[in-house]
Image (tube, rainbow, N blue to C red; front, side, top):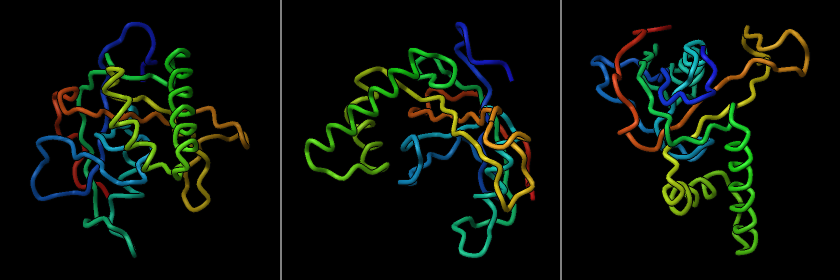
Length: 185
């Protein structure tokens, strides 16, 4: 994966979904209230993490919302020109922290509960569009899962591999969406 630094305006992303009998024509928007960056189109910047997401969240398991016994991975070209790059851009990272902390202070001043869902809704309704932000590139800090054979770090507590995901708020920033891996188990 090429580092997202310099003046790069496009990257390749990977989108995992439940396997369906017909190919998707566009990515599906995540509207889950637990989505850490809010409502939007989510992509991983390395295919291995799309596979893990498919295995963990897109395959039917006991008590799972998934409706398939396999998953597909799609790829697309992503326009990141107007995205906050909280992973590789120090100024963007600092601005992101300030925006989140200001939102938290606002909620506390209004005696409103500070929840992921409410903060994301507030940012979507009042902040991101006003600032011209059309997406966020984010490192979700992996850890070695106990119940999976995945090692993100051989050194305990030093998770040096970035697990980078991004959300795009607008479909207009996604092009060349196509099936990459089909019917993965």
